[in-house]
Amino acid sequence: MNISDTLIIGGGPAGLYASFYAGLRGMSVQLIDHHSELGGKLNIYPEKIIWDIGGIPPQPAEDIKQQMITQAKTFHPEIHLSTTCESVIRHADHFETVTDQGSFYSRTLIIASGRGIFTPVRLNVEGAEAYELTNLHYTVKRLERFKGRHVLISGAGNTAVDWADALSEVAASVTMVYRSEEMKGHEAMIASLHRKDNIQMCAQCEIEMLHPNDAGDAIASVRLTNGLSLDVDDVLVSHGYESNCEFLNSLEGDIRYNDHQMIKTHDVADTPVPGIYACGDQVVYDGKVRLIAGCFTEAAQAANHAKTFIKSDAPEDGMVSSHNDIFKEKNKALIRKMH
Image (cartoon, rainbow, N blue to C red; front, side):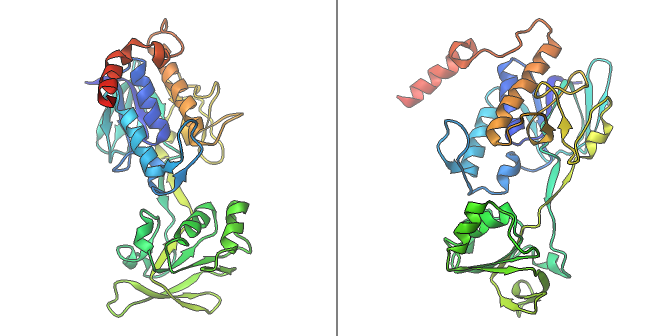
């Protein structure tokens, strides 16, 4: 039975940095993720420019993700994708994490599950699923896909507003359809949308019916509840995400949650269960910074707690890279590559 020092549940930014930092602390690491690729929510908006990570110039989310993955693999963690956590069993001296791919064993556990498995809320219109392989979309992977096309966006939250703004630069037209009176995105971004000639707003209505093309394999037009019928090339749905974090129900101990299934931690990443720590979107505490940058501190704290749980006389913090012998050979290799 392979028992790692820590097992990380979740491969988003928090889990990836926890993998790096746990390796830095000399721990053996296993990481599991439900999805088929690492990166967590960064995979939802790969071309969106990320500005708010300290010291990192603005870059597309896809590039940030790849850099995080490279860093996470520095100390050769054991990574298992398409692996869904079902429950956690606490044994006398280790944890057993039961998944749909079998059980994993670890001395500590770091929960970085990002508030669970996120799946987009599907369009509740008859026959909609038939078009998901053609021109009904729940995310924007590549803007170029919509170049010169007439796009209808259903939704009015931050994601829908971001999509509309980005697509207005490449699409022939963008129509936003939403049930509320006002959009719910950031004020500055909404103001920007109103200044663009190729963006139209349809408030207080929603999609009522999808009409197929002659071949029957794609949406040709959309009828709205206000009686309007629009010809479209693509339909984008942004109705939010459903999260599934059922494995949390199996955790024993006095772990408390808020209304969004976020673990209430103390000392940033500590839970009431010895050996279980948490970080990223899965946790809430006073003073939490809700940025990608904030999860790095939480992940490091989780790894530090795990290290001292395993080895009580270990230093509470990891040594900074400029003084850490573990990087000597790696630095030499990087210097050779640069020159």
